[in-house]
Image (cartoon, rainbow, N blue to C red; front, top):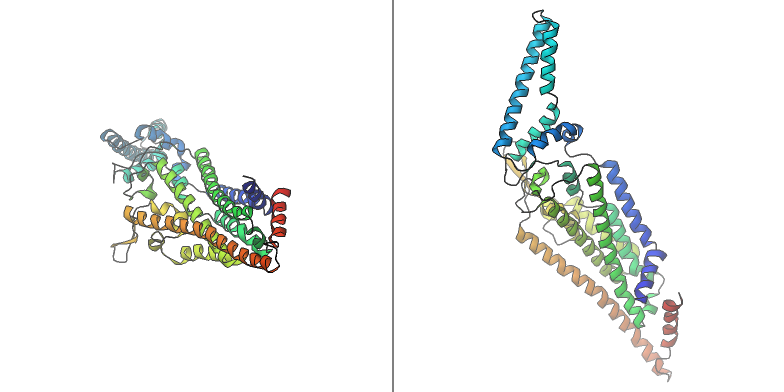
Amino acid sequence: MMVLAYEWKKLMIGQRGLACLLAALVVSGVWLAATEQPQNIAMQEHRSDYVWCLERLDGALNDQKEAWLQDESEAITEVKAARAEAQESYYSGLTSAEDYESAAAQAGEVLAHERGFDAAFQQYLYVSENPTNRYFLETNGWAGLLSVQTLDFAVLLAVLYLAAAAFCSEYACQMDALLRTTPEGRASARCKVLIVIGSAVALCVALSLLQLTFFAVKYGLPHGDYPFQSVPLFGTSEKSLSLAEAFVAAAALRCFGAVMLAALLLFTSVIVRKYALTALIGAAATLIPFIGLPEQFIFRLPLPLPFLLATGFLEGGRFAQGDGGEAIAVFAEVSPWEFALVAGISAALTMLALYGTAAQHELLALGEKAPLRQQGKARGRPSACRRPFAARNRMLFRGR
């Protein structure tokens, strides 16, 4: 525990890792608040009228709700026609002002919630395509929350910094040779790995909770037990998840992506031993596929990127209309067996990277010991030259 506390203090305080994590969280929160827009603008602009309609429609579509929608639509159409006729008669001098005002007042009562009804009717057209797993609800909160469970550049930079700084800071000042010669120094490698992995998970969890709070306050997150296909972004998905389950799954996938990225970067850092090169390799391995590859391939590669994007694993197929009017698939849904294969290979690579990081450190430690033993025997004093290193290392862990 003493070594763990020392390494945490060194990485988080001495090397400003904690400040980096907090800065990433603040930047992500500010960016979300500044740029977030409702997915359904009409639903938000006429929210009070839409809520009036939703009180009669909330939940699964049935015959009674469908009949109400049809009756209300016909009533609005008839009232608009009657109002236009009364207006024309009034300006033609065929109707008195009192009759015109009476007709306009009656029309106003029917058309009071017209804008909200239009938003509800558009939602009805979507729900009626697949009423089994599409329900009526306010979708702006859940649509926004699920759509932001994707690549966050502030989080990416924070993970790059922590993973590169964990070992490369010691290589830069040549302290690694000293630390590897004692049990405390070798234990510090495992502590570094634990701290970096834990920090990546904590950052992703904190960001997801921040986003959850933001959308719950701004829009509300009702009916988390409704099918997540109720949100148009996932309308064609064949997965059986509720809205709340989809959020938890996306957040968990993003956490795993951060862990995988951190593990691969830690292994890279003990190989190349250069801070800038480690960060560059991590950024290139993430951003090049993100910019240069279509989504069809990204979510079928055992890399951190597809897990950091997260929601692509939950989406259904997407289609675009070709020049001849035919439907062209632009994204095919990731099937369960494809996800299992990608996740299995990615988990294996993560475990190998973590094991390789510790093993590489141990091999380097053994390489440091052998010359010291030989030097001690040549002088007739067994391992005498190890004493200064051990004494200095004890001072590092006990004196600071």
